[in-house]
Image 1 (cartoon, protein in one colour):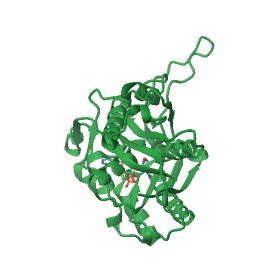
Image 2: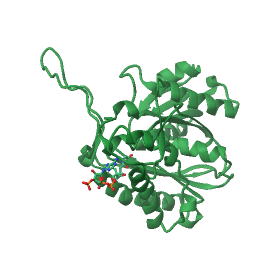
Image 3: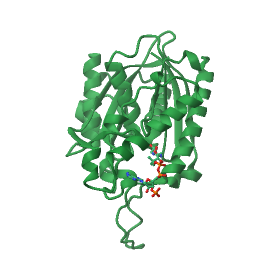
Image 4: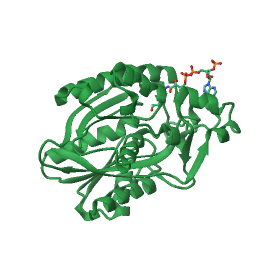
Length: 321
Ligand code: UT7
């Protein structure tokens, strides 16, 4: 079995409140809270995906009393790297001194941490790798149009890390369900450099995140409960046996709708989007670290990690702590 016992997270120091955003775009604290649940978010004032990912990784390693040399795999899930090359995971490897690790990035937007976790699990299943650092890290503030109220109020920056290692017994990842629907992908997009070379001129600049919020909302409230139901069934548990549902933190109303569809009380769905907003691939590992550090997870607890995002992509996993 492969399990997570150790986590860490890191956030930029600058907090931007809804009230501050009222000064920048035509919005209100009331609208943002009512429609999303978000009250504030952390925004980079110089931190990068790599510096935050490295800080989260160091905290996880310190907590575990592990040396970076013991890590043999590093995966960074991100959709907002500062550089094309080298990948973030290799830069994190250098920053933390994990000299024995294989390192690469995974991009599945907000589902990225779950996809990276599954990838790491499969490496560990192959027996050659023993300990993986799986990280979700984003600086979304640099791909936001800060004049577009329909997106800039929703997102934040941060990183979360988890150490996945081999364990005995019943603990660990018990099931994993994932999916993608590329045909509907353009409802949430951010374009990069277009083809521009001596043979094909293109002067268009880089664009920012754009989203059909209602389409993403409908997709989320339908897909996430289905994925959770399948993951719980595959793990051989009943829904009522699940102790905690750690969902991607995009919108409180989406989380409520999922809880309702699964006939589960909101007390089982901890949230942090009030303080952090939506941090894409970092949202699930940061939430996991928050509940772990608050002593909310007991040994043997059955936990769901589930998310959805651009791609479109989605995933759900059952983890026994
Ligand atoms: O990680 C995945 C990322 N994405 C998501 O999870 C997004 C899922 N979707 C959502 O969370 C919601 O659809 C939103 C929060 C994005 C929007 O909420 P909504 O209840 O679907 O609002 P809406 O798009 O239907 O807009 C309602 C009104 C519109 O005005 P009119 O046309 O009714 O006059 C918008 O222009 O609210 C307006 N609006 C705003 N007003 C104040 C949109 N953004 C804002 C804003 N402040 N920030």
